[in-house]
Image (cartoon, rainbow, N blue to C red; front, side, top):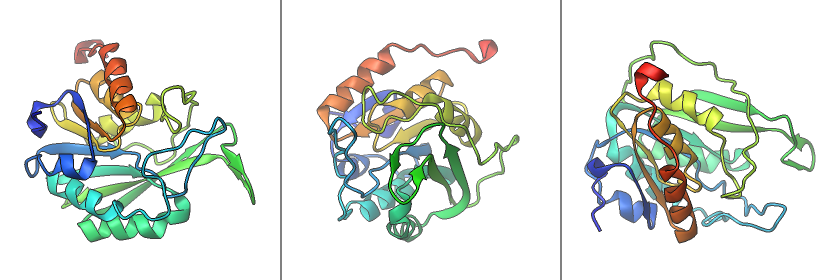
Length: 224
């Protein structure tokens, strides 16, 4: 099976580290990803996330490969688990990324409750090299809408991903999500007319994301 990044427009099943090793260097324009948070997550129905454990030995090599395949002077947007931010930061900076921004996504509902009610998600904007400042910088607080988590237990809404792709990728560039899950980041890329590549280790999510993508059409720029 060919996995060259320049083929684009597909979801590949496999270990993302091994799959990315087959990609050419500097072949990806933007990485937008939601990796496991290293918290042993289990939703209300008992669903879990592959690779989401306290070990996280895959974290550093995964981001090292992301850095390798990303173009020079380009961005990576990574969601992360706030309680494991030290491990994420070590993986990001160890790979060569430079944090240049932080996003907060406030929710109108409570995801879980313990010492406080957890009502937001977060992501870091990471730079490789010295990317240009976007012509129209977006705000770092973006309202969250509930996706329903029908396909994946941590399914992200399109409404928060579309502005990230629009701001930090170029038209015609390839958007990569090495932990593509339900395929939301890929759908957002497709809707904006970008090329996309997804990777997921679970066949059920790779197939579900592929089916989902087949249901969307690219909207011409003149009609957006």
